[in-house]
Image (cartoon, rainbow, N blue to C red; front, side, top):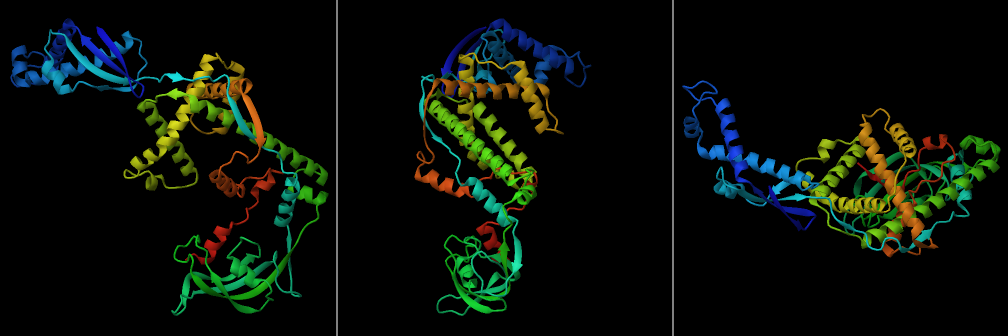
Length: 483
């Protein structure tokens, strides 16, 4: 069988396959024989239908179609094997089936064209001499004190206050009712803008700033009206930028009595015996986190520089597979959070979800394939001991789930090779450490500032994990005015 290859865009390989005359005749005759054995034609026993009657009843076109389908599929499979081509996914016919059907004559050569996706060629460029900058993260010298101060507040005792007015830092219990006051119009009650025995901490960002400031100076039992202007970015669009008046009644006033930073406090919030040991443990955690963040910054800088210079034309088959992987991972996460997947992954939404996932899929593939190619070129390997240890670690994380051991080992091997590739890059690159924040653009600065509020602090103890997080400003505001 004669096969001519041609490289095409998007990592496709074009194939022109010439099927010999004897093969077209052989396959056609085999199809006729199979139909003769299986066809049910009145007046003839099964398997005893004369050839001419069979052709008349079934029609020569139908038989040629069946023979042509077998010819194309078998010839393409044989061509891939003959030329040692690693094909990804299904083939695509370039020649139309109708065109081939009109040309097909049993006992005559038949030539057709097809294309298949193949693994992409990867040009890594000068990957052994990368020069990058990465931000060096250093632990905040006040991190331990700030952490302990937060825990003091969380474990504070609330003491009733009657001898003075409310001040910032107090915890209050209030009744309130809000009315919108459009200019020149009659005031209207705010839907959901009323609460009884509402506990409110007088802290910046805890609630509407005008109300917090309005409560400051009040005494228990006092009622007053406070003018409020909702911010433009208020979660409820119907209230954003609107003017309102809230009637407030201060029912209870409490102040926070902070526990002493002593050994008893350390034992209450951690497994350490003394406050000195707790401080030492926290300092170590903050230092380790800073070192890990610096390491991550270096790796990200190297990967970004490497992938930016790599030339790779991704095949559509791999992109679609990666998109499906992302959607599957997303579904698993959503299911863990108790979300109804049938309401999200609908037939109408799937095309949109796939399109949204493509950029991430392409970025992940470029990085993954690049690291795999580097590991191959540098003959990086993973020994069995490393594989076994990592597999056991993953199995513990997946306890109770059905796992294919062979696929797990393949996944772990790929993951470990990528880690070795990154380590190789770090050993052969020039990395300049620069101060944290010096490489951020205005856009990343705003994202960073927003994320800092939700960054997890080092864990002092296991029991600390069970503590309830403080409500965010948005959550408090929505609670106060939701219907």
